[in-house]
Length: 388
Image (cartoon, rainbow, N blue to C red):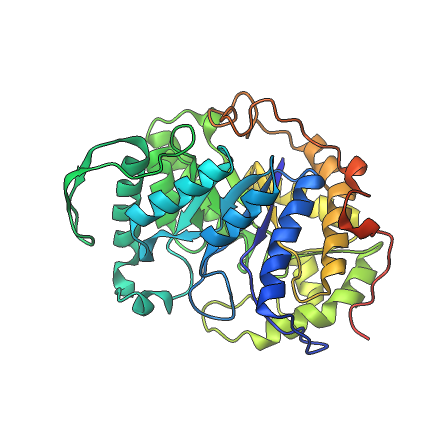
């Protein structure tokens, strides 16, 4: 198993204390978290994109560029690039720039996004969301793989003259994943092109996401792609990750926060059914509990999904030092056990994208050796009380 840290950069008040950090501090926390994740041996760091709601992730390319400047090994991903509302020419340019800055460490994750308010903001019709995604993805693929492209389509002005976007990617087209949350369409699009799938595994029961993954697997086979290169990533729920010595203690500390955030979210059709912490821990995708509980839950999802990449999100309304301690403890106490039980070829020599120059010869740092690196010498055994 490989591990990703995802931040879609929500900017929310702590529902227990009412505290919220400034926009500047929150954005800088994302960069600091990515740097610490690299030190601890995580495989990738992903930045989300939202253009509505209580998020400050409207410019993920800017944040990823900042992360590229302070890291040297960790892969950089988006989660997701809302391609349906964007211009593929601009996406090709911006993300190729990040690929160059990071010397080949970029992988894109695309999708239509799950925020319906984004479409009128960009003057688009929500009814066209799937058509927009399909057409724009086909153009993006060509722009990254070809030079002197001419093109015409339904939703964007034609490219009648030969077009070569610059800069070019660092070493051939970066890999593109497809984010999938609610329908079979994204799964089918990924399978058609032989691309990997990233299941949100966020707010629905696990069986709903299994339907999407099964459809992807069947379609991938039907299109004749090599099953050795069929990779699936999985999210970890809207509640994020919280680790304590015991599951009971994790629920005691984090329960009021989780339930406060769940109660405050009222978006019909887009709410988690796991409204209380007991239900979320027992049946939901949130990784809350003892290290053993979290290991068992990830492996139970792996048994169902067969995924190669596990994404985690920190509880970003917590004090930042507590977030970093959770990140560290997860790396030390969860990651090694899951890696041993669920090996994968993703980003290894058998993976066609495993040898991109940004990764060639890279060594995997030992999380234990990184415990005292930077982080102001804070250790995971420092106790923080979330709500006073």
